[in-house]
Length: 200
Length: 200
Image (cartoon, rainbow over the protein chains, first blue to last red):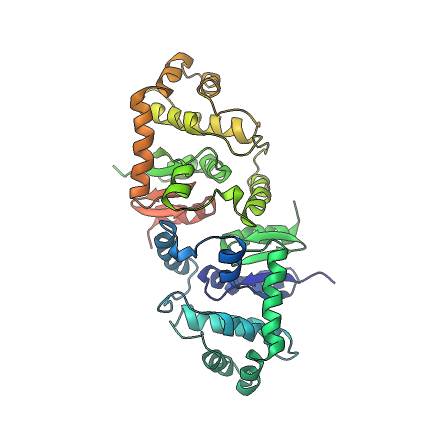
């Protein structure tokens, strides 16, 4: 059995979305599964790296707002970002932790459903109720996920997911690990594909 | 006449090198010239953005050291970085300011000669003498460029080049501007090519 492609992401990152839309297909083309790994950029960027939030960084913040919209067009994705563009992604990431532990939930569909609701529809995903609504729209049991999001095991699972990532030197969204090899950024996907064909 | 493709770079940035190796060909394929614009990341990153140097940033620093070497292999370029990887690029950037003002100097050849000496040969380009040696090896008059590097007009030219870039919101290396449209990063070159074909 080959290892799954590990895909680290935060819903506040549109670049994470651009890559999330493609990583499943890339992995399947190489007979791999995707392991969806929630990451909190508020922890990795601010606490672990000591940096300001990307959108609040002088010069880089305004550039990124422009670039993200242009990238959406480049990748052929609709673009209607949330207002404001920063929001709490904790509930949505907890939903993914919950989904990872279920046997019959399509985690990829949940991740893409939440991402699209936030960035293609300008929708709300910052509360447990909003997240459960999106989940219900893709046939996940609303009551089950709603309880799951606020269970202590899931909360601890998210903390552990983020801490484990930082321990492994993982800091951004998207961040992809293939057989231990780290790739940061949606623009590294061509390199990820080449690596899946043959490491160099 | 179409505008030149503006290429902002710092010699301390290996990603600037990866893009410098390709931007000339991309521009020529679209009947454009390249305007080589020296940038000091020490000014843009530390002063204008208030960030630590990339290689000194927790988590990101170690990742970038690994990624840069992997990128060199991905792009088919030899990799023998300078020791240490951080050095003063002021003399080399001043040489480019000088070259931009000459009628008979191949600026692209100078930029690539300096970049390759530093990053493909582990060579020294941090002093005016070292820079003049590289220039002489590609048939630039050693005495002329040696004097040029330390002329007050060239020194002021570099200060102005960096200040003008920051005023325009430009902060990284490489940073490419096509008809006013900004692109940051070597991994944006496919997007630059598409933009040169047709803005979207």
